[in-house]
Length: 192
Image (cartoon, rainbow, N blue to C red; front, side, top):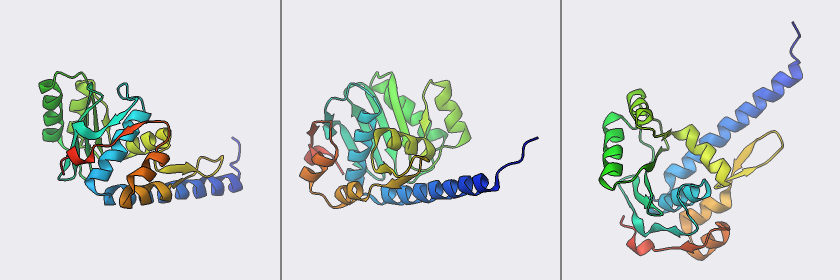
């Protein structure tokens, strides 16, 4: 049996601590966003993660109220994204009913909290992947949304510039930060 290097153990422990700090800070920033700005972040993250043929980001089909963003992205992906709420089986069933009502086969069910075990099981049985907090962090990383890699060790930090813009505006600045996707902001039609 080979001995573990105490220096390597200490480094791994430090990296783990930094990742937990990052996730705590990121969660705080996301859950403090006004719901209409949360909608922008979610739609952009979905576009950057390949949900639908999102060559443009059209928020006109999303509604935001009561801590949830609901709607259809690119006329083919039903989305519900909840801020700071554990989702249970009734929520999962309502999500699937919403998809079926719109005759959609793709859906993305997101929460900044977690899913109950029975809700996650129900979603998996319906060929849907529940996106809890850990999964949302992964989506943010792959979309390079609100996070920045700080080292080769895979340590991230919150992108303060992005969240400052999401929290305070102006939207023209957001267009610059969200590079690569031509935006069609229709915030006026985003019902809050």
